[in-house]
Image 1: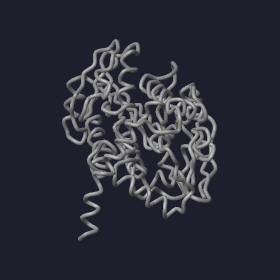
Image 2: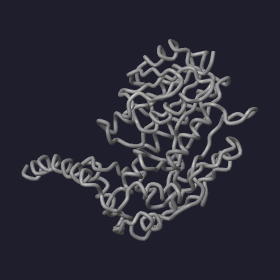
Image 3: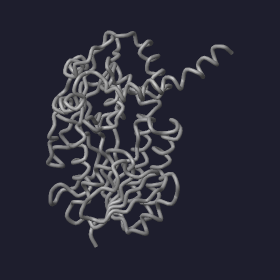
Image 4: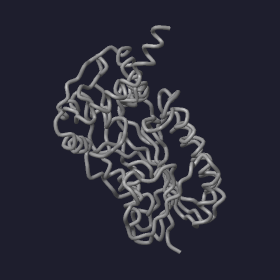
Length: 353
């Protein structure tokens, strides 16, 4: 029997793209996509048959799906870093943490599964004033993330390590992605860079790294299929494009003016953006845009034999090209105006009360 790949999170852009790519791989006999909603781009095309299962990974039904299809590889991409498109932060946290627990419990009982790939994030290292210049995979953060999506990722990685001890026969890859950007990436930082004016923290110019969405999909493909004969991709790997940029450089390359503000003022703006659902400007993203973060990718290059095709600078250039001018499209402005208008009545009511 060939490889039967189960992909969680196919209802989002990255999961949809990966499902389409993995169907074209030699030796892949079947791809099963799992999410509460189907791919936004429709059923992915490819050589291998594709089955979509509308299911919530927080429910035990995923165990039946794995057993029914004889899944051999699980690629877990349903670990979100944004509440946009979801009902609440609580639902997202449950999906991230409880959903991962349910999925790992199902995989643990499935003898057919031989490979597990988990999408994580470099935000597990946190962003703090006294951070080292560069984080590598064995380093611990100076300050552990105390909440938000970074804390979710820390918990998810802890459960994955526990699973690895219980199922040593399964090759486990944890991929810590830097901020994913690109023409179609639906990530919080891409949304932030889409603003006509970039609010920044006064007195700070953080160092940043990016990974292009094309490279993110390619690293996932390599992790799911083994990049070279005689190698194993088990372990934890930082994934980022080469090079580093500071935020002021990013703004200039995008042609966007910046508005330096006191940290308290930026926090207020971030809270308003989340409340109006214009932008998911989370506390950990605010810390990133204050203190920055840089990671070492030596293990990725040496183990996978792969260097991302886009450097950090090139990934940003591709995003800038897709954005065109620094101005927002009229439909984007209209969408934001509508969301803000929805909030105004409730705000007025509270004020009168």
